[in-house]
Each structure stands twice: as structure tokens, then as C-alpha cells.
Length: 358
Picture 1: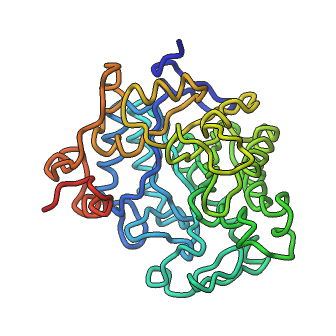
Picture 2: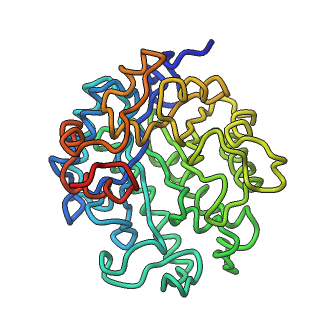
């Protein structure tokens, strides 16, 4: 039987000491200018100390216009380098791989945060976003690449491109929104061009030891599972991506697309040829048994989110096969002891039933 505590090797960069990865989690703890705060530093380093073999930041925006939430960690300027470097050093000292998730919210950027109209692959009247010009798309591609170079300079082992959850790379994949007539719209090849241009640019301008990951959504947000399967295959075939992080919402749910013939989501992606590329999965992994079930189904890595909030040392506790995350709602004092600041606890209060009422 495959063990959760087996190491995981990659084509680029060092190995993971086990199969546990801290999923990238919105936490609203950084400073207004995107620089690292002590609260965010504590939250992340506690997870590295708790045994996660890969510790990933929250979504970190690569352009100021791409900010998606208040208190977001930034990676769009050298003013962020000092904090990013300090964080990478601390994570690395715990024998945990350090990753920055690179992000642009696109149409989901709140006007009050960015001080103007959000931009996207296409026009969305409901969210009052406009379509980027071709030049602006090319500038955004460059911003992702430069942010990866900056992350590598700061000492991170890897970066992940956030192509899921209706953020900007996902918005380009969305055929309902992306009706562009330039090279970034139309066919799936064109709609995915932004993603592959970023991948190519990072590989061309970063060192051979930088681990490169991509996060994708298999459905919802205008995604068709069959198209994501095709993108997945092209990423694998490129030989440039070390990990594909599938955000499944529920690893063991049945796919909603009719052409999936009632297959379970994790089975669809675990059974695809992936060569040296590793498959990470996220979605309702709340116990040691859930995680074991995911790797038994063929995943290489388990991306733990909610359970990592309630238990910073989830990997260590999961050595007990019967371990289950804390029962909800979690007392606020417990969340504080687990390294959450008041702003993060307030954010988690938006998740129904997660935190005890004040």
C-alpha cells in the first residue's frame, strides 16, 4: 500500500519528505501594501513546523490591478522581496518545500481595492469588468513570469500558477466569457495560450531547480471537464510542469459533466497518463483516512486546507490512521492557538459553522 509518509520526487528541485501539502488558503493577514505581516508569517511557519512537506502561501497577486481580497500577500514588486525572503528562509529551515502561489483575480478584483475597473479575458457587465487589450494580456503574462523570478530570488523552491476558481487564468479558459478574436480567444488552444506562455516564460528565465505547478478547476466557473483533461495532458506533454494541483472541491464526488459518464473526479485525473508530473488533489480531505483514500486512488500529493486550519500539525497527527480534524464549530481560542490572527478568524467566520460565534 502507498503510504502518506512516502517521499515524492520531482523532475525539478528537491523531494517532498511526505505527501502532505498545505493548500493555498485565503487568510487576509498581510499588510495593505501586500508586504508580509507577522500574522501571516506565524500562520505559515506553524504549518511547516507541523510536518507539511510543502507549505504554500495564499494566492499572491502579480499585478496591483489583480488583487483579489483585502490583506493579500503581494508578489508584484521588489518591496515584497524582504518579507518573501524571510518567509522562505523560515519554511525551508523546517525541511518543508516553500512555494508561492501566483495569482491575478481578473474580474473578481474588487473595485474598492484596485481603485478602478477590473480587467478580464472578456466583458462581464454584472461584475463591471472590461476585456484586456492584447498588450495588457502580454503585460500580465510578463508579470507572472517576473513574479516567478522574484520568488526564486527570495529562496522559494517553487511557484504555482493559480488557474482555478474563476481567477484570471481560469477566465481565459472560460469559453462563455472569453469571446476574444485575438490570439488569446476562440479555440481551446488560444484560450489556454496565456497559461502556456507563462509556463514557457518561467522555464526560460528561472533556474532548472525551480518546481513549477499549475492549479486547475475541473468543472464550474465555465470549465468543461473534457477541456481541462486536454489542458492537463498538454501540460504533462510539455515536460515543463512538475505538479498539477486539481482543486476538486470534493475529491470523491461524481463529475457533473454529462460526457464524464458518472465517473468520480479523482478517478478521471488519477487515471490520465502523467509521466514525471505529480498529481495533487484538494477537496474535503478532513482525516487520515480521507488522505489515504486519495493516494490509494492514484494521487501523489494531498493538498489539505480546512483541516490544516484546525490542526497546524495535521501530518503528524495523521500518523494515527483514525485521526480526524477537530469537530466544528471550532472555539476561537483554539483557532488563535493554531496561529490564526483576528482578521483570519473573522474571515473563517464567513464559512458556515466553522468557528464558534463570539
